[in-house]
Image (cartoon, rainbow, N blue to C red; front, side):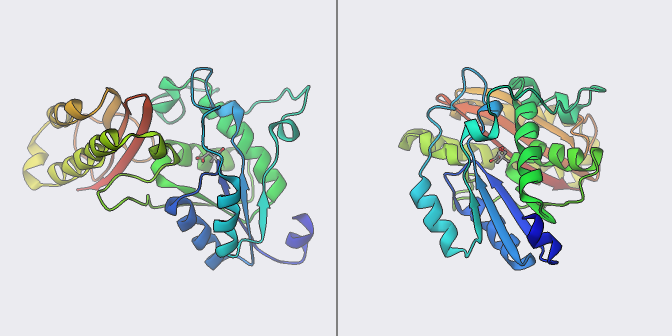
Length: 275
Ligand code: PAF
């Protein structure tokens, strides 16, 4: 990769856990349009899964993934083993949010999944060093992850342009996720409520009448709308778009965020609210 960079070729990189869907492919297509060379990694990073999470059962349809990437004219597929990435004796971690507590690195998914973002950051910084990209592409579905990696790149001065790309949705609104494959038909129908409630919030909060209202009551109503459809709400909030600080009052740009369980499957989603 270094020699490609030296030859003046721009490298676009899309890190993934595999089990690719249209969301991933939209990142790959953008990378293809914007770079000479496109590299995609498929690596189910064990460091980003908690002990009770779905590391073992995470889908790994490698053959299908490779075929999909070939169709998109991807130049390099990087599929390392966990041993190659983290050999015996590996003993370094990138701990985001370690210096001062900030909602971006210490709240929402960071709170519910201790160690998750440290695992993501440690894996991603290694992948970035291997791929040496000029551009890297992340999906907005994992909004906190995207902000956190963007910040990490700035914090440690990596010369990489970060791109956050829009969430791709199923026709009924459900955000695409490799974890959707865990859902039964009934759970799949119920999961539709997640984006429905987010879009409801987006609509309500952007109405002029909402200005006079406290966000707390809107959040409460949204919660009541979602509860009947899901097994458990981990969080449902309206937060600042950049800091992820929970908001009490309406402001121009906000982010409505949800994490919830449908059966045993944890799903996350978010929508930007412009008012
Ligand atoms: O969002 C994901 O798929 C993963 O967290 C990522 C970015 C590939 C890092 O392992």
